[in-house]
Length: 127
Image (cartoon, rainbow, N blue to C red; front, side, top):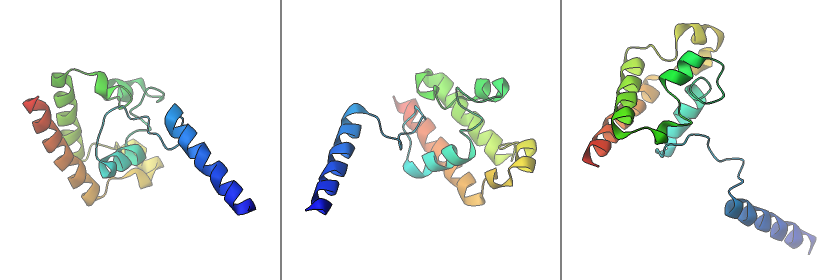
């Protein structure tokens, strides 16, 4: 009986959290994207490219917290910047990688981001 009560309380908590939008797993990235892309961006890019980042330069260059608020042209330009920086190995920057080598993009992550940028840019052009 006690297990049932605990399970019921957990179920209610999940339902309430979904209804109120208070889920600890919710992302702060404002732009819809595939889960695998979001995971890479959250783990490798978001710390520097968000509203609360320390570096004004990095969040001004690209801010995933407000990316969805940009115009279509600005989104496409931002996506193209992502592709260019990632392909050329400029992101994450070398200084960051010296302190946090785990932030380096793997070849698979790089390819995933490049493919997403291409498909997302095409989708935006069709709108």
